[in-house]
Image 1 (cartoon, helix red, strand yellow):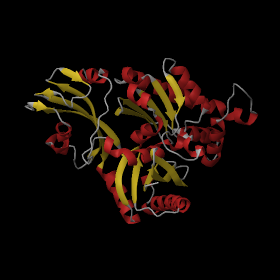
Image 2: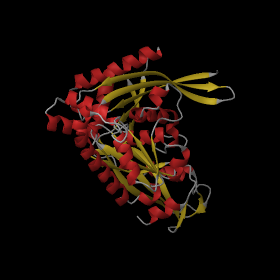
Image 3: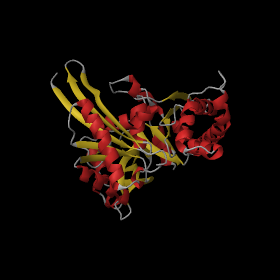
Image 4: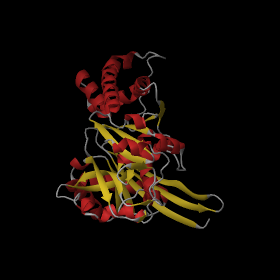
Length: 396
């Protein structure tokens, strides 16, 4: 064993704060292995739908609590962290044209986007770019190609998918971690980190939709050719199921949440439960509404033809047997499965839990972030296997 690198990730969500610590081991004749060595979880209040709406003291204590548990289990002290967020993000698509190349196209030609006024103009008083994905290429203003590197051309047009985030929101996060005395290495979109955790190579290359049922919303992420090409947000999550039961049956949120979790695992087709039957129709109505909106949103998306091969359900509310059945019945022409974490070693109790996928995806990002193609990347790499996406985006 020649080397041991430590990576730490903090996933801040509306249901909990999760801290993961992993070690990357260099094993002779086996290469690098990422091993989970510590996990800490701080559950947020049941009525919390936006973690940074809590007071600074409250959210800081939840973060520090999760870190303390993970550090104790891993027997290490962390100083650098990757942090994922799930709020205040939007998409933008930008065409970046390079003219008069008159030479073989190199990686630096594509990365010149980050030196351009077009990119710097994305930094405004309200927003700034969080992720940048090169998702299509055209040379000589006509020919779509999978990978232009090594080709000789005069002109190169690259379409970029930019994820923007609220500047005020970022400032709150940076201030929080500065006060905790942790070096925040990078903030990552949970939409992206989730797809990194649950998609296998074939799904990522050939197209997939990741449906992540969070506490306060559901996020639909579209991946093709190993790039996050877009996402949609539906403002319904597991909390809405809980709140429905609470309001209709005059229960506390805590009581309703306990019932919701039981119904998640309740299969009415296989057994009867007189106690749960009193709440089942309330739950079912909300589930049917959510899945109907998911279906409509996905099929109306301009990306549908690219990503409909595979549907992966994950997130805090993904354990619901009802939601699983409804989605599977809606997308009969797509391969469907429940998403769990891949490519990380550790307890299957954690790795198989769809509620933790965004957290584990953050660890994957931490060990492979040089592959994304952002301004800070030293080794830009675009794995391109198909040309269909480039023709597709040419017509957008």
